[in-house]
Each structure stands twice: as structure tokens, then as C-alpha cells.
Length: 577
Image (cartoon, rainbow, N blue to C red; front, top):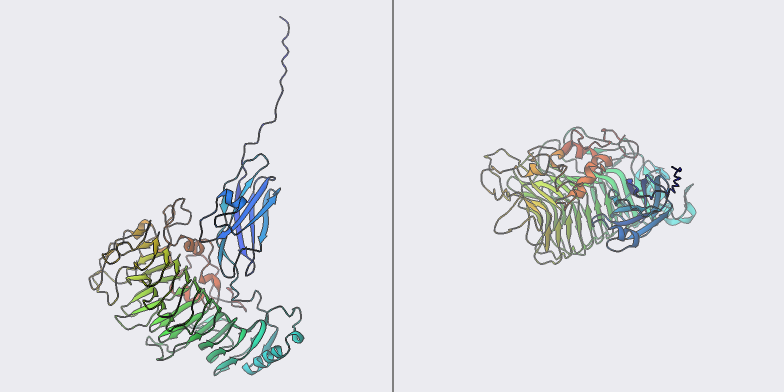
């Protein structure tokens, strides 16, 4: 048989393997700028990145590539390299807001990776300087004012070495001051800071007030100033009026009223009056009478962020009078567990009693009540019936309390939304104890135009669906003036455990695989995004340093279960040492 010749022609195998993206990251680099990075295992093709608000659903691949939906800005990288690829956004953002970045890659053969998203990040709120190196120092308040006077008189002619006339400036008070420190009529073209000096620490005994090397043993106040800020300093009372461009960052105002468990001084009520656009961040306010901080005569556009409030005889933060309080941002604040309301009374963590709070964003705030002093309840969020706040949004807040109106809104407003909040029950007292005034299972009142995907614990005729559409109600029901024998088992289906008296924040950690957890693939319920920030990103007070870290650890996380960098010691700029 003749030999049979066979000729084979080999065609290159088609690329059917999609790229894999990992380690998506993003961070705010300024008030309106951010950087991003993502890793791919395959070079070539096109990498797409899309910026969107953190509170919005992730965009689709089509929206990530072409825009639309919640996408605010897009970046396209042609020919990404194997490994890490980086870029930036400089448009689409506002100061002090939360965002995420979505990514996907299409390789040269048309295979597409899955869509991955970065953790949430914030643009800078403008509350603090990026570097706290002083441009000048003064041993006394008079010395500090002398430096401010010279800068105000000739800003362009007094530019510190290494800076330009467009930069912020910092003058440091290097020693303590006995008496009041009042600053009036200062006006600067750029933010000008008066900062304190170390060593930074915390009083180890009650009332646990933060300490520093330049304590003002009196009132720290400013009036009719433009672009004047205070940072890294302690005082015993605080006030401001008629200021624009006001910034307070890491200021501790504590009355230091007593070393025993008793009421704070009567009639001591600090307030910021008519200071629109103020930025108040990482401050500690404690030890006052009617409230720790009040906004009066208008404070439109104010940002109140990452502050710690405690040891008030009545309320923590309050708007007691009329005025324009529109578009305020109240975000990531913690309300302490020490409150000195009379037995049977209650404490409001946030109360807008009057004024126009339209556009208020109440986001990611935290309360974990404990029965450490009087038998009382804590009301988390209240816009009173005399308030006309429309388009108020309350979301991603976490509270464990015994007040029936955990999130209360007025029926007179319109467009209010309460969604993705965790309003949990806190078993403060032993079963059989009698709870005093205002006690009830926490719920979200029926004054909201939209309630959805919340956790709550109250179900009765007056508010038949406090959890809202798609939410979960634990049906603990009304325990007002009755023996406490609530069924707490519902919490444990979604959270580590039912929070008990003197419990720590680990009780509020969502369980993996449940709808409360940030990695859940379906519709998430409760404050999943704020929970991810706390337990994954470590964006919480114990990570933020002095003066808010120590009170948070003392009251909420004594074992540092979150795993932050807190050690109890602080560096020369108040950071965790």
C-alpha cells in the first residue's frame, strides 16, 4: 500500500480567558479629587473606571464604560499592565462626601472581567490641614493674636517660608492659658489655624476629659471672623457667632465640672450661632447642661463629622431656635453612653426643634445605649413637629437603644427618607425590671415619606411597619412600663449577639452570609455600608486619634475588637502613636 501523506494545519487557539481584577482601591486626595488603583492579571485591552456616590447602587458595565445612572466621572486606560494600574479623578466630587469607584476590563479578544468596586472613601471635608507644622508659635494668647494681626494686616508680605499666599497658615499656642480666649473680627483670604501643643492624652479618672499642653482654662470663642480655624486644643467652654469659613478640627471642649457622678453645671450651654458653612470634625464636646452643642440663628451647609458627644444633662446636639439650617451634613458622629438626664427622662442625640432643616443628611452615626447611670432612654434622631425639614435623609445609622422613636420625622415635611438603618433593641436591664419614661422598642416613625430596608424592633397599630419596605422587624413590641422579657433571638439571626447592658460594639457586627453584611449578594438590609467602614476600613473614632479615640475605646470597644491603631498614646499632632 502506498504511504498516505497527511498534512495538518494548526490554527492559533482563540483567547477565551477573561481578565481578573482584584484589590480595587480609592482614596480622597483633596476636597474634590481622588486617586484609584486596581490590579489585573492580564495586560492589554481596555480598563474602565467609574466614580459614583457611595450611597448609590454600583453602575453596570455599560454605565461604567459609557456613563449614565449614578456615574459622576469616568476614566479609560488603554493597554493596562499586568499588576497594579492607577489613576485619578478631579471632577464630579464635592467636599466631605462619600464615593466609590467601579472597574472592569475588556481584553484584546473581547473577554470581560467581572465588575469590582472599591471600598467607600471620602473627599476631604476641609476640616483639617494636611500637615500641622506651625508657621509661627506663641507662648501666650497675646503672642498668638500678635501673629494673627500681622498676617491680617499684610497677608502677601508675610508669607511663611516654603508657602505661597494661596496656602493655609498655622500658628501654634505652645503653653496653657488661664481664662477666656476670645478672637474677634479676624479675616483671612485662606484658612488660618490656631492649633495647640502636646503632649496629648486623656484623664484616666472620671470625667475622663482629654488633655493637652495648651489647655484654655475658660471659654474659647470667635466672633465675626472669616477663615479662622482651631485645632488640637482643649478648652472648658466653646462658642462662635457670625463667622464664615469657620473650621474646628480635633478640639476638645469639656467643662471639667466634677470628678463624681452628678449633674453638669447648670446653665452652661455652648452654641455656634449664625456660622453657615462651618466644618466641625473629630471634636469632643462633653460635660454641659441642656446640650453639648447647639446651632442657633442659622447654620446652613454646616458639616458635623466624626465628633464625640457625651455627659450632657439633657441633649447632645440641638437646634433650639428658628433659622436657616438647610443642607447640613451630620455624619459618622458617635453619641456617648454617659448621659445625665433625670431618672425617667430621656436624652435626644440629635434634635432639630425649630428652623428649616431641608436637605439634612444624617448618615452613619452611632449610638449604643447602656444603663450606666439613670433609668432613661435615648432618642437617636428627632425632627420635631414644629420643624419644616423637607428632603431629610437618614441612612446607614446604627443605634441600639430603648426609645420608641429611634428615627422620628415630622408629618409636616415632604420627601423625607429613612432607609438602610439599623435600629436595634438594647437589653439594658435584667428581665423583670421596669423601664421608665419613653421606654419602648426602637422603631422608625410613620412620618417618613419613604421607609425601606431598615432593621427595627417595634410593630404596633400606631406605626405598623417601622422597618419599611423590604426591612426586617424583630417584633419585640411595646415594653413601656412593663416587665422586660423581650425575645431577643431575632438579632442573633443577623448580628453577633443581642446587645446587653455594658456590651461593646462587637455585638453590632453583622454576620457574614446574612442580608445585614456588606458582602451579601442580594438586597442588603440595615446599615451595611457603615458597618463595612467600621470593620473593614477601620473608619471609626479609635482610628482617628486624639481627642475622640480614647472615649470611643473606653465606652464602645475596650478590647479594640475592631483592630485599629489605637494604643492609648498620641504623637505631637494627635495621631495614634
